[in-house]
Image (cartoon, rainbow, N blue to C red; front, side, top):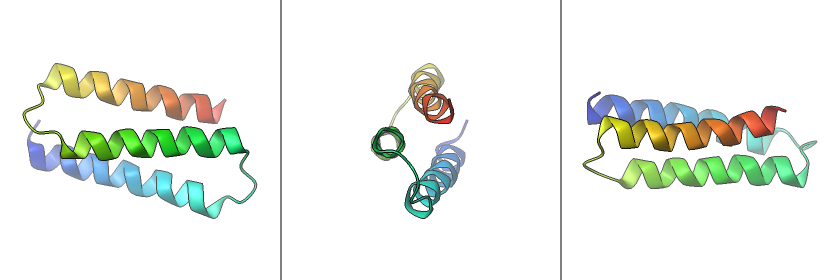
Length: 72
């Protein structure tokens, strides 16, 4: 996957998570922390260069795990 496409995917997911975290005042502190952790991981992933597809998928799976914990 090209770097440009990865950055678009990261930006899209980050925008959604930020919107959820800021618009939902009824979220518990734990839920907000999970979303903030996912956003922070996305920020770090966006900055990294030279990622292999395997490393990128591993990082994304960690972020998806945090999102799933938020949804449960």
